[in-house]
Image (tube, rainbow, N blue to C red; front, side, top):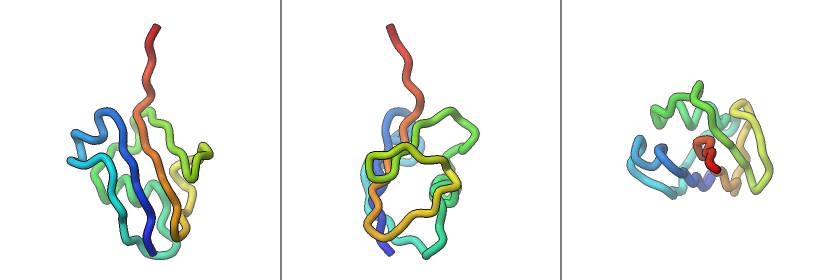
Length: 75
């Protein structure tokens, strides 16, 4: 099944792309996707699926749009 992954910040440099359509198996979690891309899941990050915040153990569904961003702070 196809999902769209959008990466932000340092994750773009880690993985080498900012936006990509991925073909994943049913039952795949966001944590599975992060591990396959060698993104350290223990780093603080914001994860959204279809515009709503979710955790890394959330299973993805066909057509999902997933955003993964490091936590930013500033003043």
